[in-house]
Length: 191
Image (tube, rainbow, N blue to C red; front, side):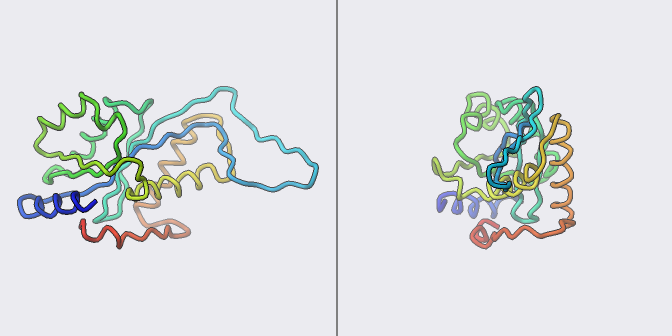
């Protein structure tokens, strides 16, 4: 992480930066039972949809504004990831994007590496392997999944994506009923 901080500090003198933590998460219409209760010896059935469907949601957390940018894709592959990178560039057209992300295979594919090499507005900084605790968007995914799957099952992916859209909009607009207590002070050196 120290190397990433020093790289960002050196770039800040040359460019206007947008530092984003990026990751993807997978959502499905299958029930995601976290916990529950029932009377002793009573059997409860969790309703399941007839067909399992899933989507990959790419997300980027901007530490400066604490906004989340996202894009849905049928699958998490290099092409979908590059489409998300283009979307981020549209949100920050005048800035150099410094994306801090894990070592997932789609982030390091030949296609993505070639794209980054010929793109002047983008740099990727990879975290140490197997260290999701350094990526604050992982906490956001955990919070989002607890709100989406907390006590409901869905028949279609459209219902799941609609709920994701609403929750992220409410988070970005500061209109949540209860606040999320993310502590970003550990990342203050990156700002």
